[in-house]
Image (cartoon, rainbow, N blue to C red; front, top):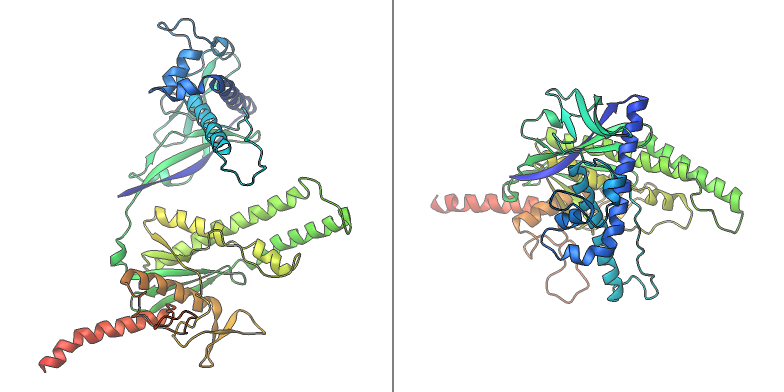
Length: 459
């Protein structure tokens, strides 16, 4: 049994006075942390080497009966009645920021740099931290999660204020999920709680998988999925595409090109933040598409009983296609291959579905039936032609082979017993072996022949 952490954002209904108090609380927490970072720049060596760093920092800043005269009385004087739980959370956040700088600076001094003339990392006390609210101490919920009582700074004292929870998801309704301490978010317009949940999940053993969902992430079709069983049977298949959203995104980016030509002409440079609103809209559209498509793909896998989702390993992959400034280059820049894979993985893991990645090389280059290398249709790049003359959808062919590669790896068919379609350039006696869907067909036939062989011999 494994556990994953998933966070829900709950919107809160707050009046103007309550919103002001929440914003003051967040600002006060950030100011407290910023002051702590200044103290830790001085005392980091002695604090970090001790067994209890939080207690060591508290002795420097907080007065108690056993520590009546702390070295930095500024904190108790300028942050009166600061809650102890928030104080310790701020100490841990400040320690993390200072420790990060110390590590990066040590690496720079040791010569670990991106380039020889790289400047040293800069120290900063700026932060955009949000205060964590510990249950019972800084936040309280009713039994039905209809209201939340939050401890906030009123300007003169720390008081409890009640906020109605306007919108929430359903993770809190599952009895097996464990709610952790939320974080208070305030952006000036709204007030929210980021509530993390510890979700227990149980994945099926890889050796017992009998049906997987192979997913090919493409340019012309955003995603193509197929349900494939261990014997090579294609149970279902589906195309996932949001053409209207992609057109809106690309139309906005074309506007950026037009504005850039009008701004700088044939030469010159654009100012920092040029057309940032249009770029922000494009990012948000991509994020929305990834959210919607990942939900549809995972639902498709569950609907047909798939126990795993198989994707191509495209991390750090940067395609090279199209001339500079062309529409094809722009489409590759807007490709959702990594963002969509991350969203699929996050959703599938919570539901107990395995997510596996296979090598992407050659999944679209060879026919799923084992007939050899394919040739792209010169008039329609979405179609391929097999050596037998058969025309087939390129994305469907690829997702079959993606699922087959996972089963071939799981069953140990990636060795010399797998089918070879083309001979490689190496001098080895065996040709190179691209795994396709036909590899599973041959393995299933061989297993059936082995089971029938003893019966035939006895007869």
